[in-house]
Amino acid sequence: MRTVTRAEVGTAELGLPPRVAEALGELVSSAKEGLLALSVGVGLGVLCELMEEEVEGVVGPKGRHDPGRVAVRHGHDAGEVTLGGRRVRVEKPRVRSADGRREVRLETYEHFAGRDPLSRLMVEQMLAGVSTRRVARTREPVGSSVDAQARSVSRSSVSRAFVERTQAELEGLMSRRLDDVRLAVVMLDGVELKAHTNVVALGITTQGVKMPLGLWEGSTENAALATSLLSDLVHRGLDPEQGILFVIDGSKALRKAVRDVFGAQAPVQRCQRHKERNVLEHLPERDRALVKRRLRQAWARDDHRAALADLAQLARELDRSHPGAAGSLREGMEETLTLVRLGIRGNLRRTLESTNPCESMIECVRRTSRNVKHWQNGQMALRWTAAGMLEAEKQFRRIIGHADLATLVIAIERQRTQATTPTRQEAATLAAR
Image (tube, rainbow, N blue to C red; front, side):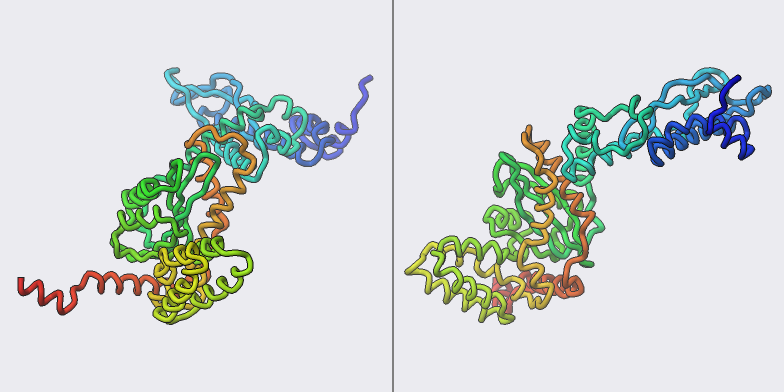
């Protein structure tokens, strides 16, 4: 006499069909491992049913002769689907055309067999700081029977998936078209990853939306590197005739690149925080607080001439005691007041007087790549930088003061018009010739 299990008693009391009762009986062991393991078992069963249903829709009911059928059943084969960050084996039905020449693809299987969700999950985990050797430990508990046959969880598999995914993201970022993008601001800065330096560009549209524009890799932050990046932006559709404000950290190389690609009339705002830091580094500790206060007081003025006069006066006072600080202050001094000269006030000026928005994106790059111990080559540095930039883009919000960006664009356009329109004296000289 056979002993009846509790599961069989429960399914019999519910009056379920034998096939359903048998399926639930097989899931009892999964239920003991938790609700998620039970759900996974049910989900895999449902997937098999969906594939069989699709086969029936293509081939027709089993056991019925149909002379007009276009496909026939062709047994089953081993397949794999993506589940919880791993590849799990399933038995998939095969269908061939009636003439036997080609395999008929099943849409249900193609959908669940795609590797994209797997690679996306791996990238997110690694950008969150999970190392390749620990990725397998972060997988959801889907049951011992599923784990026993899972694949793509080894360190090498995770690494390959990450490289493939980040390479695709890098190519996508570097191929973004900019024809229909109206930018008001472009910020340029460099990020160092061991022996590799990447110059990155962040754009701000006229609606205040931040967007990564691109990056370029080299050994140092030089003019050729920055020129290559800006030239690539123009090649991808950025109109060099647009009225764009460039915000840079004070690097002479970046300034030269802007002038070479966008012309001498392109307005440039030097980052005041970088300038302040550079000046203070030439001073003893006892003098830094006073000079810092005077710098910020001058930059806070709304009158361009008065602000420039205050900075020039401070530079003269520093000439004798600290000539290094005076020279640092004079270098690009007028460009620290570009926003004041353009008449920009309030929140927008506070946002754009430094490269802080771009620095925030770079900080995300550093944070996501903090676990990398060995930088193999420049391509690896590009992939990680692009991945960090796109990760930062998910958190972007419109800049503070975005409502005044239209005023900024109009001011830049007016300045360009004035610079290209000859004065009366110049017009008279040209006429005399």
